[in-house]
Image (cartoon, rainbow, N blue to C red; front, side, top):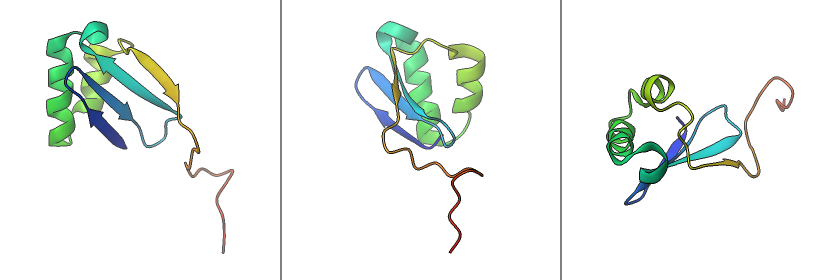
Length: 79
């Protein structure tokens, strides 16, 4: 996980190597699930495993990351 944003009834997550931000809401994933995700995000561990095993594709929205600054083998700058 690269970053997260927590709201009253949602959590938005972006990943280190991802091109999308994912927003999970009470409506899309369930209140209990979103609250567990918030807890795991704050603790800084276990969220990735929880997402892949329990939550999967229950996101409310999937938004492309703008100005993607990811570094990969195709855009490494040598100085």
